[in-house]
Structure formats: structure tokens, C-alpha cells
Length: 163
Ligand code: GDP
Ligand code: MG
Image (cartoon, rainbow, N blue to C red):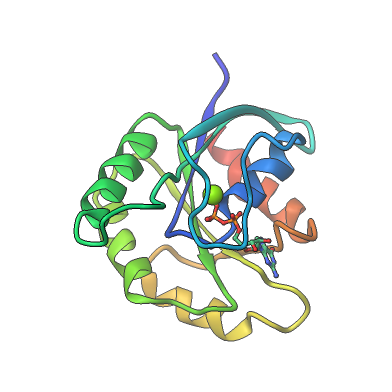
């Protein structure tokens, strides 16, 4: 079977954009409104010759904000538990927000290796978010732009030991 990579993170950090880039097809819906992807999606991905199965987590739209964290946590943990490695995305333009810190706490106890990814790094924008992300406790983030395809080689290097 192919190794499994899960993409996790709060809504609007660029999970579906990264999924689409790795799968190379528009299988995941990307929308400017936060958290618009309807469901968990899976696809066969290829990254510089590395082949794996990729899981895009989402489906939080139209949720009661009071029950959102529980649902999100269950979905995130199910995806991470079934994966060989998880990509934990943050939005380096927005910086670290409390929900990122909460997700980091969920992930800290996981048996699955976690690769922190600072997305939306384009040129110098995002530097502050990259620095803030160090406090999440997952080491230096992979800095990339899923939208513009920057940092793909760094993502490859970070994933390769696990798949
Ligand atoms: P998700 O909710 O985590 O799946 O996030 P989406 O992939 O739907 O993206 C949310 C928004 O961020 C969309 O407007 C994307 O176009 C935008 N976005 C995603 N990746 C990048 C990136 O690398 N750079 C910038 N500037 N915007 C991005
Ligand atoms: Mg999405």
C-alpha cells in the first residue's frame, strides 16, 4: 500500500490548496471563505517522484461554533491516527492564533510524526508567522507557498524520512 500523509490545521490555512497541488487535480474545493471544503478527501499524490496517498481534512462549514472544536478534533485525530506522517499547516500571514495552539496540543500526544508547515510564505511576507510557529513545539517549519508552488523541495526533504 502507498504511505499515507494527512494534512491537518485550522480552516483557511491552505490545506486544500496544498492537496490540489500534490494531487495535481482539482479534487478538493478551495474557496476564499474559511473552511469551505465539504468533506475529508483522499487522492494519490506525487512530489518530486515520491508517491503517497494524501488526506485533506475539513468539513467544518455550517457548523455550530460551540460544537466545532469537538468535531474538528475527532476528524483531525482520525486522519492523523491513520497516517504515516501528518502535515500540520499554519497560515504564516495570519500568524499563530489560539486554534493553532489548541491543535498543536492535540497533535503533541500523537504517535504519528508531525511535520510543521508554514504556508503562505511568499518573499518576506510570512516571516513573523514563521517565527511565531516555533513556539508550537514542532521545530523549524517547512516554509512554503502552496498557492505558488514555492518550497516544494523543502517539503519533499521533510517528508522523505517518513515515507
Ligand atoms: P483550507 O480551509 O485550509 O483548506 O484552505 P484553502 O486551501 O481553502 O485556502 C484558503 C485560502 O487561502 C484561499 O483563499 C487560498 O487561495 C488561500 N491560500 C492557500 N494557499 C496559499 C498560499 O500559499 N499563499 C497565499 N497567499 N494564499 C493561499
Ligand atoms: Mg479545505
